[in-house]
Amino acid sequence: MNMYLHELKSLRKSTIIWVCAMIAIALVYLSLYPAIYRDGAHFKDMLAGYPASIRAMLGVTVDSVTSPLGFYSMILAFVVLCGGVQAMNLGMTILSKETRERTADFLLVKPVSRAAIVTAKVLAALTVLLVTDVLYYAVASTIASMVKQSSYSGGLFFMINLTLFFVQLIFFAIGAVVSVFFDRLRSVLPVSLGTVFGCYIVGALVAAGKDDWARFISPFRYFDYSYIIQNSRYETPYLITGAVIVVTAVVTCYFVFARKDIHAVS
Image (tube, rainbow, N blue to C red):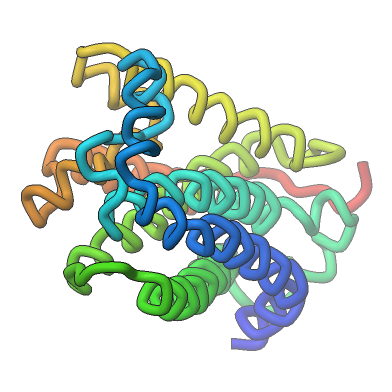
């Protein structure tokens, strides 16, 4: 419990920064919605002039882009990108920071198992992600209700927002498993940014094509907002794939961390 609370305390400042950044993105774009709704015909004509591949890369559906959920889906793509960076960075630091900061000996001499250490750190990271998403959802739903020009389904709005947590879980798991193999990285931010933005670009290129199997390459394409709005559910193959990635990565972290040599001084 002490390790869990200590991790939460150490992550408090960065969590506030990420929450504010994500809320700022939603606030800026949602504030434009009333004007776009009033001039919806011209906005659709402008988007229709873009090549279909470009619209797919941007996650834009012309027919529904002026609806509350359609417009919000376009915004959420940028929020998810921001959340993915947060989660990847969190995953890469949560298990490796003692090695980088040369405090591993202080932690490992405590009368707790390595599995308990991993559990406390993973639970702290998950708590941070949950708090981030709950705060973002509360503010985003309030803003959306204030700027809406027509009614929309609150259930679908929640389902769309829940994909943020799912994508964050995937990138957190990837970051955590990378950290147990490469715990001597001087800085994790370049790796986090490179991985997340690389997946985002690949996902954008995949969206421009017609091959559904290629969507498995990028977690950003596991959740199609248009599909969710039309069918009120997630696509099972991609949901299962995401779950497999998370479970496999976490199990690997437990296995490797329990057996690796950890040196306090490099």
